[in-house]
Length: 404
Image: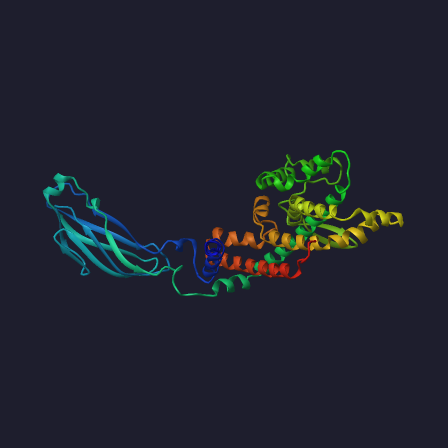
């Protein structure tokens, strides 16, 4: 009974994962997705106008791949009536109007120019048939880099030896840790506020869910417009009117902003902090829902007893609420860490990975499609998988086993 489910899971989850591991050990680019094949361009020059005219039948052959060689290349072509071959290369033979050329091997990126001399008869002129009426048909052997059994560690050596990779890795952890903590802290405050009854609480709950349920492309472009450094930037206009700043701040395009404090010059990661703020704002409703549900399951008797003993609201939160929320907070932290580390669309829509906001997931896209190096992109994806797998194992080790 479980066999169909097993095959579904295997096909949906495991096969793409194994394919990614397979490609990470291949030196493959976007152009290598199509197997190498010979490309033909057939020409007859000059264009025949009278009978008994001497012409040249020319085949330009090139290998579509710049790396993989073609072997045992043989092509045939049916020549039209009235086009008589008078001389051809040694590797070509003619049987009636059937031309066969045994080219052999064409190295990657190589081109061949095959010329045959011919004489045109009147029947060719009368029929008005061009030599290209029939296309050359080729047979050949080639090696597909994706299906071959040759493997390499060059992709991993390339990404690990680059200083940029370690910078991207640090940015990924910085973005993930602070984005996760920000979402949890905002969710905790929102749950604490809405844990008590007051007029309009259902409406406020619905508004709190808006960042999470709204389309990401809509809210991302709303933030881009609000934080624009140009004249249309609403937030910069407010800051200038309040006298906070004289010049507009490029929140999404400025990597660092320098400021003086305690006699030192500090570099503040402006774009990365803005992206983290967006991450915390967009995903705090999920934390808010889980924390609020847990808060409402706590017995009110404890709070009444603590209040009678003179405990302040902060003491009630610190000594009563927080210990009850440790289990759900740990689960949320680990889940949000995994999801945030794997985020791509938020950063890509806000900054495109520029201004010091490039994370590993953005690097996968850049390597695979911008640089057209699928192997390197798959290798970075494997690193992402290893990190996420480590946190998944940590989640199963530390997640609470009780109903809390």
